[in-house]
Image (cartoon, rainbow, N blue to C red; front, side):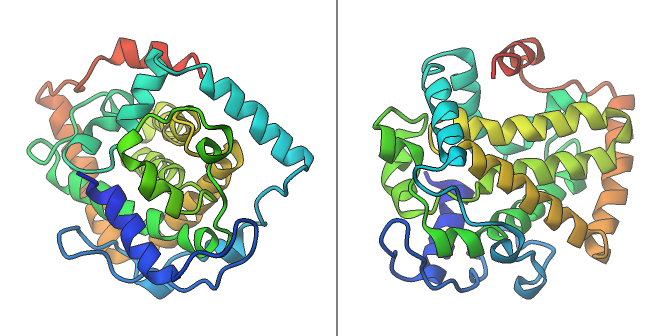
Length: 272
């Protein structure tokens, strides 16, 4: 099942029209509203950051920046089958409820619809805000993904055909993970370092999966930052953020433990 990730790609492809040849600009248009089965973001389409304005073009073929991306891709290929690869495979899932637990270890408590319902909604809604904000640049540049170039395996082979049609630059996963890390750091500032580090690792997982270049992940963080900046003036977001703070405190007081193997997660993160 493609889940929310597939939905983001689907609506963006509808918005972007036919793909342009690799390396040539395509006409960019805003992504339409997400399918009704997914929660809308907090931001209206015209209030989201414009990644096409925010970001420079992706590295040009033969440039030093592309050589850096190539080097990072070669290092990532070596991770195939490792614990970090397996973790990256899990990070690829943006559908809920599984995605809710991604930051559980970094937060130090359970994140679920039952234990932290408003936080759960906060993550679902900011996913759309950050993810859809990447599509101005994605649709314009249509950058080829690393697995198309190097022919090495990816951690989500069932998404091969979808990913080939979806521009690589910038990474939507990276924008989402970084935005989640920043938002969670606002909700639990005492855990900010761990949460932001996990947000960075979430984007790096796409490099480990061989589906994004390093520069895709780095520029995705810029989009994630811009998205969270826009959210600071949104009353609905601020109300859910305040409720999430209370829920986190209550979950800790109730002894709710993180889901997953936090020691194994820490060991995997230390490798890439």
